[in-house]
Length: 472
Image 1 (cartoon, rainbow, N blue to C red):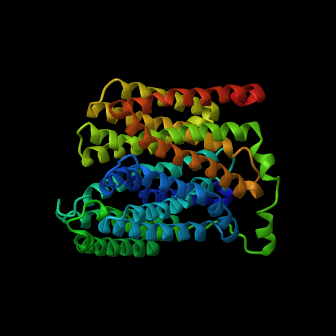
Image 2: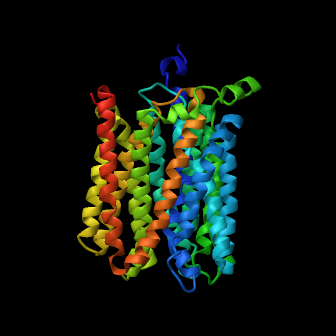
Image 3: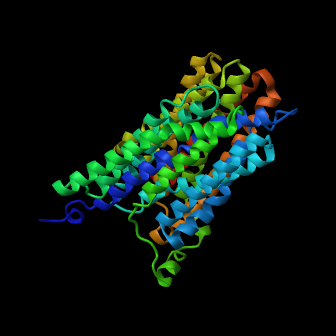
């Protein structure tokens, strides 16, 4: 009887994609916490001039940008699994530093914590590329979509963790057991499935008993853990939310430990990772240029608008809970379409999906400019998420066409450096524009979407003149 690798050429790739998607759900939850609360914490910690309120979010994005290439090169040396686990540990340190910075009222220390969290985010961003390391050409866009689909759970886990822990005096700890127990149950089932723990009767019994015991233990420990985290920071707002993110990263480390991906075992293999065309040759390809322009356009705009949204909502009289719910809906919209974006790319082509994403970003601006009710904010943020999903996944899939396997580390690292440097600039300018334009700041932010989208669409048309067959 043929084994899985013969029956399904994507068998190993699917297994790893499922693990990477689960890791995205937990490790990726740090980003919604940081972005939903970063501007509000900056506003809270600054005494006079509030124009630097979004600086912590900018520092977060700079951490991602500056670590992008080193993270990719590290993984080319030590392998994906060890690289991802190392990144998660950096995130744990960042969570601890951020929490105590808020407790002691140190804006600079909080920026350091956000930089560390951003550095961990650079490793998390590589999850999508890791999914495309294996499998057939047709499966790679789907694998990227699978991993980004894990982000829809990060969109729930991250903001709900933030809401639950924002005010250490605001709620009881009675749901913490269900929260932690449910997380352990889901992760246990996934790990058992990828380890073939449900195939034979004896393995099935062992898996079920192990999952049941782990879930019961997590349920019983949930309340005392939540109580301990809260009591550390009473009565300081926000601090406990960042420390709680550490638990999510620990769960992510457990998942990542089960990855089975090729790693360079020999000096020859490590040296081969640095071969291929020079980076200058790779980045001068028209397809590389356009993929970066569209990825930067979709991601920088998303960061630009999303970073400003919580502060704009605060200035309009809405509460931190209102803005955090808005970010949750937004992040769910970012990752929700990933369940089918890969299929749409396979059917209609990468460039067409990117173009649809750009048009969705324009619709976001139109809704945001039509009013400042809570409904306007929520719908605009949802459309912003949809636009990012189509634009970014399509652009990432385009990028994978531009390099050979031995060139992936430098190509992916260069892409992410350019990407997140632009994202950091966008998040910084968001606060500056809100402060400079006052009551019209939110409108100014959304008007900026239009020329950026125009540049992206024009670049796609230029690529069509270079390679018309890609639009067939």
